[in-house]
Amino acid sequence: MVKSLGGPSRLWPKRPGCLEASNQVFEAMRSILKIVTATALLAGMAISASIPTFTQSQIDSGEAIRALGKIAYDTAMARAAKATSGCTKDKIKIRKEWRNMTLPDRKAYQEGIQCLMQKPSRYPNIKGAKTAWDDYGVLHYYQTPFVHDDATFLLWHRHYNWVLEQDLLKLCGYTGVFPYWEWGLDCGSMDKSPPGTGGGCLKTGPFANFTVNIGPTEARDPLAYNPRCLKRDLNDDVCRKWASLRNTTDLLLSTSTVAVFQGAVQGEGVRGDNGKNFGTGVHSGGHYAISGDPGSDFHFSALEPGFYLHHGNIDRLHFIWQNLAWDTRQTISGTNTMYNMPPSPAAVLTDNMGFEPLHRNITIKQAMDTVGGTPLCYVYEPW
Ligand SMILES: *[C@@H]1O[C@H](CO)[C@@H](O)[C@H](O)[C@H]1NC(C)=O
Ligand SMILES: *[C@@H]1O[C@H](CO)[C@@H](O)[C@H](O)[C@H]1NC(C)=O
Ligand SMILES: *[C@@H]1O[C@H](CO)[C@@H](O)[C@H](O)[C@H]1NC(C)=O
Ligand SMILES: *[C@@H]1O[C@H](CO)[C@@H](O)[C@H](O)[C@H]1NC(C)=O
Ligand SMILES: [Cu+2]
Image (cartoon, rainbow, N blue to C red; front, top):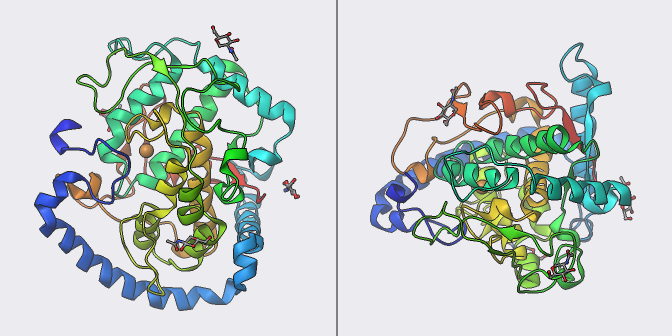
């Protein structure tokens, strides 16, 4: 089914190849987006009272995004404080920036991932999938055409990270903090940052001898057993241009509808409330900052351990954005197919999102609130 979409073989293209032959669809979507953007402007004015204004230097230094993160954290905590069942305040898990985790937690988290790389796969019919870790590659591969550049991108990946957190606990006993990676703290010094080695097979660190078992997307049978080393190719230039603290803060401050926010995150060329074009977007920015194999593979990047820290940050941005105007930011926009190819009905909150056999499916609505308790119950601490 992936092939029938003519899915891209490279990572997060601005538009999939098939769209070049279907520009009409894209143009139609663009004109819808323009209307949405006009409405967004009005909505933006209504909420701006509660969001402080920042100087450029506060934005560039990260002071602004920390302040926004604090507002979001307090807003979500206040909501949970009112809950009498489900996600009550005492149950909330606090997600932290990697560097704000204790050293024992960081080590235990990495050991948890290594442990998943030893547990058996839950896909008995997929020969290439050997481990519970490989399962994440298979699920992401199957779901790719339905959970990118559409209504569920943000919320499917939100829940996917949570499913990994449950596996770490249930299969490997990890009870520590779940991390996110603020790329912006590393732009300018990517080669010095902990995750990488600067190109080629990883030779040091916790994932030095890890074998990637399936993929790449270009393979004749992408799910066949194809063992190879994990490669990274850290790219500081991409980080500085697309994933800087200014880029993430701009994203939060200049988008007020989910259509514009999710499009901006994924680099769909949409313009924000103040006319800003987000280019490639922070999602690709963070992915390409790691790059390599499987890191830059559209379907199999989920086999790169950094994927979950990266998507932790995407989810954190969505969490902050939602909680800056919670009452109006519990909506979705779009359909359930990538760039609406093939065309499908507008998604609704009761639509199913697929996680089997890793976890039972949930509805879109169930992932809307990170403190909603259905089943999510966590907040992001600002770094
Ligand atoms: C996170 O770590 C930074 C750098 O060490 C530190 O300045 C900051 O206070 C920490 N934040 C939290 C919430 O602990
Ligand atoms: C990786 O494998 C090589 C060769 O088998 C071995 O010398 C090295 O110690 C291993 N590194 C780690 C971190 O396990
Ligand atoms: C991202 O931020 C950098 C500065 O940190 C800036 O040069 C670049 O133009 C920004 N990119 C976008 C798309 O705004
Ligand atoms: C779970 O979701 C997948 C993907 O949408 C679907 O194929 C499957 O039938 C769903 N399972 C159930 C029990 O609804
Ligand atoms: Cu994805």
